Image (cartoon, rainbow over all chains, first blue to last red):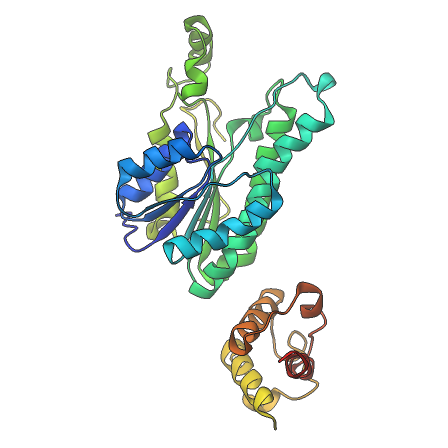
Length: 245
Length: 77
C-alpha cells in the first residue's frame, strides 16, 4: 500500500516541522522529493538526511516570478512533477480591527496566491501524464475561524474552495486535488507555549494532546498515493476530534 | 491539404476521438467536435508540442475552429 516508487513530489515549506515530516513520508514511500522553502540551510540538512532522491529547490513564495518558475525547476531537477504538496504558510496575527492591509496581503499572497500559481504550473505536466496529485495543507481555522487570524483563516478557507474547483476541472484527467486541515500540531512554533497555555489547548481537544507532524504526513501520503485515486475535492481533517467536520 | 493541416487534423482526431470527415475548415472544437474547455487547453498544448511554438493565452482564446488553428500555426511556424 501507498507505494510512490517512481513518482516525483514537490513539497513547499519543507524546512518546517510539518513540511519536513511530509517530505520524509513521501520519500520513505519511494518518491523522489523536491524540498522547497526560503531557508536553504535546513533544506540542505534534510536533503542530507534523506540521501538519494532528494533535491533542494529554494523559493521565496512572496515573489510571483520565482513561484511561477518553481514547477519548471522541480520538473527539470526530478524529471517529472507528479505530486504537489502546498504546505508553506505564514501567519501575521493581529486583532481584526487593527489588521493592516500589509498583514492581510502578505498572508494571502504566500498562503493562497502562491498555492494557486504552483497548482497552475504543475497541472500542465500532470494533464499530459494523465496522473497527478495535489495536496494543499489548509487548517482547522479555515473551517472554524480563529480570533486574531482573520487573514490566515481567510487564506486557508480560500485554499479549500480553490482545491475543490481544481478537483472538478481535472478529475477526468486522472488528477486529484485534496486538502488536509491540521488542528493543533506540536512544532517549533507550539514549543514556545508555556505549560499553562498547552494545558488550555489540550483541554479543547478530545484526544487530549497535540498532533504530531508525522500524523499530518500520513494523511498527505494517503492522498498522494495511487490508492486514493477516487478521493478528490475532499478536506481531510486531522485534529484529534477538536472540530468534527 | 497542407502538411500543417494534416498534422493538426491528426491531433484533433486523436484527442477528441472524432471522425476525420468532421474536422473541416469551419468546424468549431466546442460546438461541432464535442470538446469541453479543458480539451481546448489540451489541444493548444498538443499543438505547441507538435510544432515547437508557443501559443499565448490570449491567442489561444481566438482559436475556435480547425481553420483557426491551421491558420495560427501556419503564420507562427
